[in-house]
Length: 414
Image 1 (cartoon, rainbow, N blue to C red):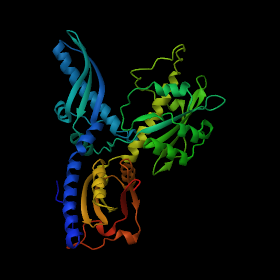
Image 2 (tube, rainbow, N blue to C red; image 1 turned 45 degrees about the horizontal axis):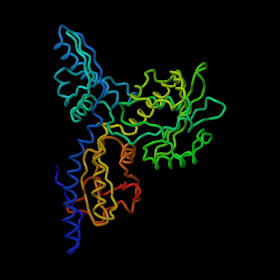
Image 3 (cartoon, rainbow, N blue to C red; image 1 turned 90 degrees about the horizontal axis):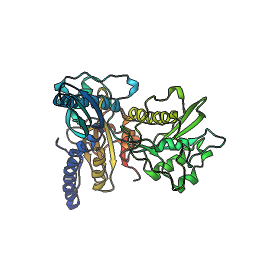
Image 4 (tube, rainbow, N blue to C red; image 1 turned 180 degrees about the horizontal axis):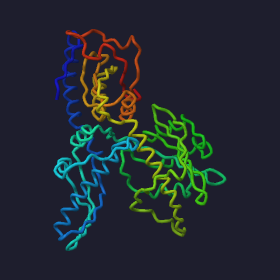
């Protein structure tokens, strides 16, 4: 853990001594939070449900080959999950020894074996630092930050009247998807009287940013996607997507014709609830609707990766001021910063009872940083010139970037 200097602390008397002692304790506590960053980061580097089916000369050979095949398939899946598809990059070639160095461990979910065949399903856990190094050495941009949930409002505009909160083929298609391997959990907006009253189906055809902001806040969502479906099975379907991201606003509508739908459906839900007593089982939705669901999920994932991409070629420092109501504010800000993968180091450049000056080492640009911080309920904003100057320069000159602090970080809602 690097030494934390506090050059801008000039307090007097008993209060100043107490503040200095508490500050030292706060930074030590933050060090423990930063050490825990690896635990949270590992979530993105786990691949579950990796299926293999291998036939070899005998059962032992088949099992050994299956384990290696599962690890390679898991690495390919991890690469697709972490890297923007628009970059068009292929996974770096790795030898068996290099692959084994990337893998932290694996678990067997289920298996069947015969004298020459092995069928299994694995969970493979990768070493985050080793994967980051592989990607950075090959110049690959990647995202690893797990975002807040993306909530979907499925507007069915295939009939005479739009439907949003009532059951129908479009909503049913969403209820049938299983677990999705991605960085952003995607789910339907849960039934809520406040949401239904504020956003009736007709209003969802031209959604209002303020209404979507209320829905996002009520459910703690990182984004809200209005997914309007039009057309029919005979002539083809069309999606229109409006995405609201807190802090960014409502995006322009994106239209996706059926010809551009993702062609790989999502895994089905493990358990489908039975129909109510006396009710007939609903007809399964058209297969195209399953692809439409996969397309919305894909757009969410790719949009998220663009927003929080880590680019080693854009490494730099950003000086920020943190207004302090008390020392607990600084501790909480640093704890949340420890959960932002693109922030690789946090140094306290100056500290007073009313504010702290931090230097963030960042892989990426300020725009990506703002989005990433918002996912940890931190607000990055610009400050005016009068507020950007430190109260008193430290002896020996200000650290790099501290003399021109353009940004402020504060707790959301604070």
